[in-house]
Length: 136
Picture 1 (tube, rainbow, N blue to C red):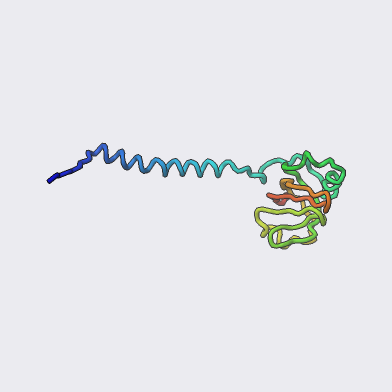
Picture 2 (picture 1 turned 30 degrees about the vertical axis):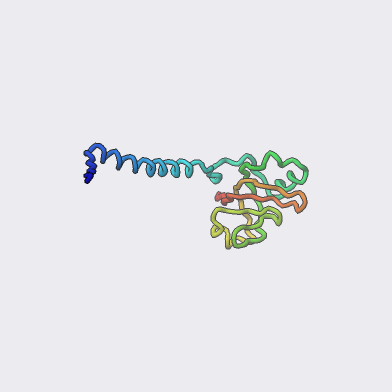
């Protein structure tokens, strides 16, 4: 008959507990760090302040490539509001972080800031995201 008893002293027990908590702490730091890596485009200064007509003209003349993936500020009229985005000057599709800020803005003249994401030369549509209204 074999009697196997294993006794842990206090130090070994503490080490087991600490060893099991370390990955949880590491995961918390990882999530916190990666969450802070996201760029807040609403706080960036625009590289260009212009009208909706002018920014579309720049892209039509192939002069707008330096604006892509940068924040710009535009003045124009909201021509349509949808459930997730709105259209400025018939050709600029704006996707705000919160559409509720713009739901009652159709037909209104507005100054906004957003990141240029893509321009389609066939439809001549410009896409902006992270759009916020600039209040004067």
